[in-house]
Image (cartoon, rainbow, N blue to C red; front, side, top):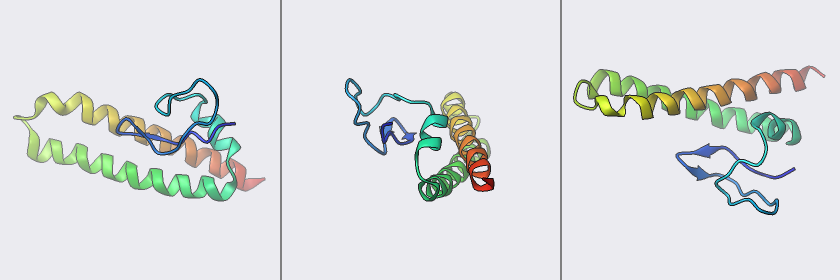
Length: 102
């Protein structure tokens, strides 16, 4: 299993050590990675993703409150990033809860 980390703003936070990958490609699903890392690493990942989710929600809120109507072109980019981060956070949180039970 690789050590691929979360892709944030098109920058890899970790590096995949499997042959044929290029640091910016995802070689394993998030679920596979969350299951492969230690419980402590998963806890840290959930904390990091929670902070990123809050940041993404804040950016979405700021766009709605202060950016519109002038920055309407940013709606897809900001909302897709917020959705992606929240989806990843909830996947990691669910796996953490499942792994913590057993």
